[in-house]
Length: 482
Ligand code: GLU
Image (cartoon, rainbow, N blue to C red; front, side):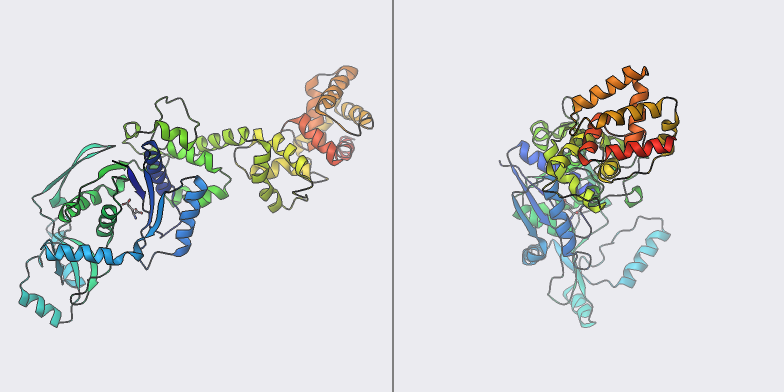
């Protein structure tokens, strides 16, 4: 049997982190088993679905590296298939037209509430006679189509994450609507549970992997598989993503869509790596950094947690940092150029390339998120810098001016400056002035960068020298100290 799994987002919003994580698990499972990963866009809700959301979903999955083997298939193009299946259920006597008005349903629910009963459809139109139906139609009433749910049934399946799950059919809310209201013999717009089952049968899906918020749907869907005479696939319900307080992650927790994570400066490799860890752990649980392929190699549902997965921003930042620190400069510079351009720094991406790559190599090890590169490299792009209070204080420390002056005096001997030469200058000045190396380093940093923290000092200096700004900076620093 070839494993065939799918991700089936509804284009009613941008690609959500929860959907993306479900896509990750589907992808990992498919790749682990040499199977197929299929993309289906569930756009039957015509009022809420938007093409720009579909676009965002496709872009997000592509950016994350979750390539699919088939699709995207659009449910809106397959309405005939759902109508046929609904007709089959009507013909078999497993579904019926239900003519209740909204007011009648309201009244039914109010009565249930008064009796302290859970709201459910009381199946009142299940056995209408031909005359009753004709009378409703003569009144001009529209009918939804309901699928019969036998309250005596118990639905049992062996969930790949949660083990044996049992649902009483009597808890499913009564006969369920599978098609929206329509007139006469027409069949209205299909609803989610019906369309999903018809598609999963048609696309020969072997494993349905989705969030645990779909467990009740699974119970309903199993009844539909049986009614349509199809084999029931395996089910796997993955844990929800929670915030650090243990509640379901929502808009209130800040960003939730993949495009927002991208804008915040996370790399797709780090984000997707982090998502694999949201609910799954590799057999060697100390291993935290891996590619999708490596994770796929080791992936199994045995190591997926039942408990919700807490979204930990600090961990995501750490992981993103790991990827940025290890990224070769030519690759990193590509990611940084748009941020530098947006910040308005003046440079030519082509002719300044070598210098930009050196800069990327210098700041790369200090980055956690890409936009941090702007402030970190501002002092390398702009002629003058604001001196922070701490930097100005540093320049006033005893010996600081002498040290900076001594460095300045040697600089004329270096039309070009290598890291080794820069180190040598620092050493010589430390010795000649008989001061601690720390004083030289701190004063030089303050003088060169206007700050007391920052990327590697020697490497920053070399870059500033190449830009021809180190001298003027040191002169300015001296004037501040005076
Ligand atoms: N369209 C559904 C959703 O976005 C798909 C659920 C499923 O995988 O069946 O939640």
